[in-house]
Length: 308
Ligand SMILES: Nc1ncnc2c1ncn2[C@@H]1O[C@H](COP(=O)(O)OP(=O)(O)OP(=O)(O)O)[C@@H](O)[C@H]1O
Image 1 (cartoon, rainbow, N blue to C red):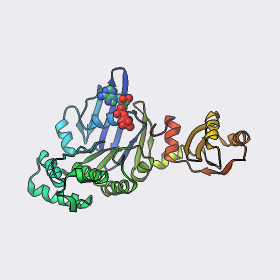
Image 2: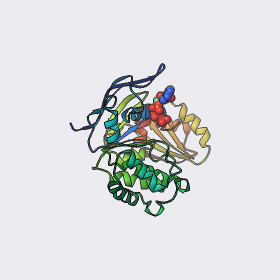
Image 3: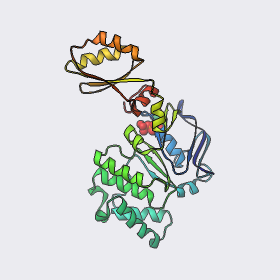
Image 4: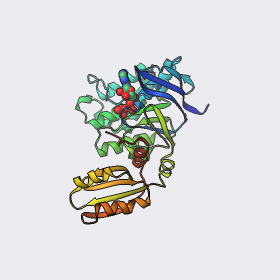
């Protein structure tokens, strides 16, 4: 049994809404795996099913060979969970939060004290271990939540949007901790940041409307877009007017804007001439061809920005 996670035909409905629809997936042990999708795609629902918080309506899900519905207790012993919110106990110090988790998992003080020292060192919180989480920055709280998920040496770590709301420096720090765990466990993460999936993950599934759309490494996913014509177009002036025009062209498959600069995916090379004929060259500061990014793949598949 080499699969850390195995989902077969998982379905979850809320009333008439299919949050997850016949979703199947095998994740090999030791993989850093990312589940990507726009808001409401079904990512958290899948994490909740795998972490035994909700039950699927149909299908089976195994964690390290244990059925989440029939062997929930065993599954909970094998997993660590970093939920979307920092649900730390504010009346316990940083160290006490970790010790509480260890006791909940039945660890003896002789075992957990050394483990907690190691983890505090790993996430750079040794100097603040006797302080309360309310006195921590968002990044420090997040690091503590990651440490807490690791206390009982889980075999599978679930990270639900681990770096949302963090500043770039704290995000990098979380990436480093996650990267340092590579090879020691299986990691399943959801994220809205394409660069995060790109930097960390061996394998990526993009999902929408409860179903998987594509599955592969970051390089394989980008290869799917090798045919795509992605351009960066910068204007000197009137960017708002040009945005409306660009959005109206049938050959512009996707459009992203950052200030005066647009990233656009064209249907083909032949679209460049009608584009230039329509917008003219007067206000253009720069036009260049770009390598497709994971974000381009995402927009191409889902027709949506990562966050809307
Ligand atoms: N308890 C619930 N009751 C009703 N609908 C729900 C419930 N939980 C989730 N949903 C719906 O199921 C769908 C999938 O939600 P889910 O939270 O899994 O998406 P997600 O991909 O994690 O989104 P996000 O990126 O916003 O966290 C959404 O349409 C959501 O509104």
